[in-house]
Image 1 (cartoon, rainbow, N blue to C red):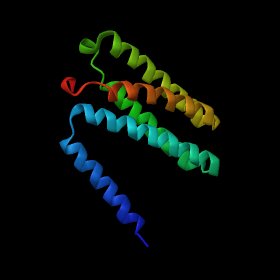
Image 2: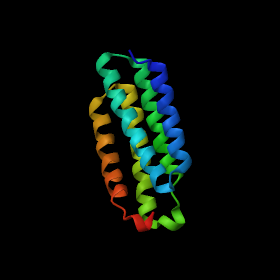
Image 3: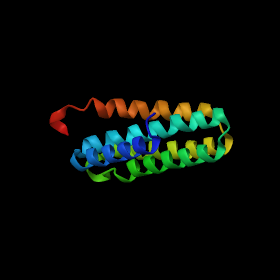
Image 4: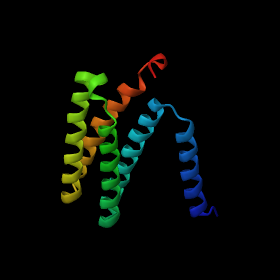
Amino acid sequence: MINKKALEGYGRGAVASEVNFASPHRIIQMLMEGALSKIATAKGCIARNDIAEKSRQITWGMNIIQGLRTSLDAQKGGEVAANLDSLYEYMGRRLLEANVTNDVAILDEVSSLLMEVKAGWDNIPAEYH
């Protein structure tokens, strides 16, 4: 049997190692992946009626999205940054609502929006990273 703690430690170490060598572009991808993971885990927590863990996962997802929001550069990003700022703010409000209401449909909505943003980010040509 594999030791769960060892796997968790490996996962944290692997992420920390990747962050140390990642480009800013890759770090944003990792943040988006992390938020999507937290939202998916929260959905599972709702299904299992694990309300405390659901709240922890949603809060973590909200914090990641807030991090994405604060990383925006309004001067360089112009209208795109302004639109993303509004979208991230909306996602945060919706996640808060999902946390209060245990509404999986809201989590699906936020995941869908974030996957759209991530798809656009993932398709940025390497020469612009």
